[in-house]
Length: 203
Image 1 (cartoon, one colour):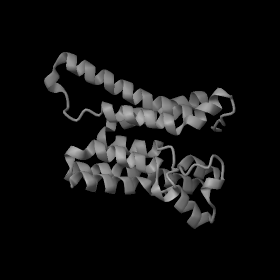
Image 2: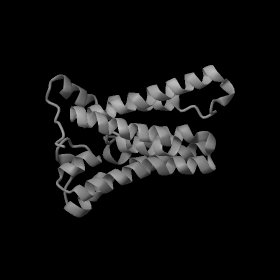
Image 3: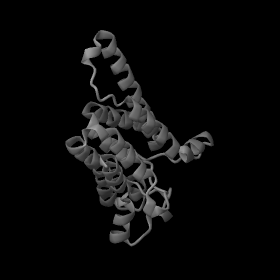
Image 4: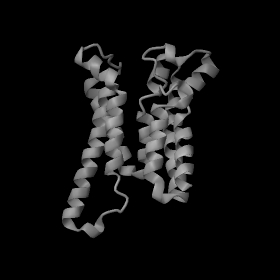
């Protein structure tokens, strides 16, 4: 029963399309008909309203953070299930015929809940790569890979020193799954990058 509660609550939380809701309420537009057609914060910014873009970003982060926090408090053994379901909820929301966003902000929210150091590593890497290459998609994919690699190295290093020091909540598996899903969600961007038609962000 605990599994079902966590799965349902986490998926529903992740599936709420804040970008679509906010632009519908405050601008009376369908964000899916603008720019990339994505429901996330970056595309909301393309609608011309920076405040809505920031609010969407914050809400997408929080919807990744909240279910993990609840699971840690009431269902600690199901934290990784909660993390996976909230992420899948954003990528494949039932309300939008399973066509959601790319999950980067929600992924960051999950990171804030399970590993503060990894979340700051992601932000630092994302900003650095963006400043160099100007592609948000490249920043997202590379940052997710960086977080995964650093955590794998950390676990192996600690294991080599003393296995008793390892945290029982190994997050490497869920980070690997997230990385694969982020690559999948950015498949169109990868195609655009190969064909040199991916849009750069103006900084």
